Each structure stands twice: as structure tokens, then as C-alpha cells.
Image (cartoon, rainbow, N blue to C red; front, side, top):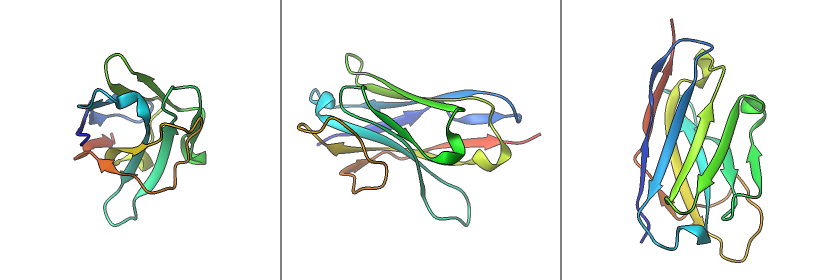
Length: 126
């Protein structure tokens, strides 16, 4: 069983930055690919980014490319999402999710995930 806890959300003005963290409970954390999703009020959940179990492969949805960066520290069982140049349309609840992937060397954002965190709110406004 893997537990995921997001943190780092908050309120920021457009153009600002935030770094989200996703801390996992299991010692086998490096067997899991991790993704970030977000859901804005009244909208469907959207995949934002993913990272493979070793941190060698990443993917991003087009709207955040060149602004967001995903990384992971397997010694700390944590995945990060650095978000720069934030825009009002980035406002959403951000969730991290994990999928057991011991044999994979890449990641796919849109796929089934085994575990989900509770989410952290990100608000971008003046």
C-alpha cells in the first residue's frame, strides 16, 4: 500500500512560482512512476506531468511545457513539481498519483494509476 501526501500549494500572483511536493510512504517508491494531475472547478481532471521510476523520463501536457518541471528524489521518497510563470488558468487542485512500474523505463500521463493523494490547492490570481 502506497500513501501519497501533497504539499506546497498556496496562493500566488500571475508570473509567480510554487513548488509542489508529493511524499510517499513506501520503501519501494522507486518501483512507481508518478504523475501530477489537476482539476479546476467545473472542469475535468487533467494530466499535467509524469516521471518514470528512475527520474530519467518525463512528459508534460502542452499547456505547462517550458513552465513546469517534474523531478524526484528516491532517497526521500518524494516527487516535486516546480511551477514557474504561473497563470490564472493554472488554478486547480493538484494531485499526485502513482502506478507500479518496476519494468518500465518511461512514463505515460494518461493511464490508470494505482494510488492517489488528497490534493493541494493552487490559486493564481491578483
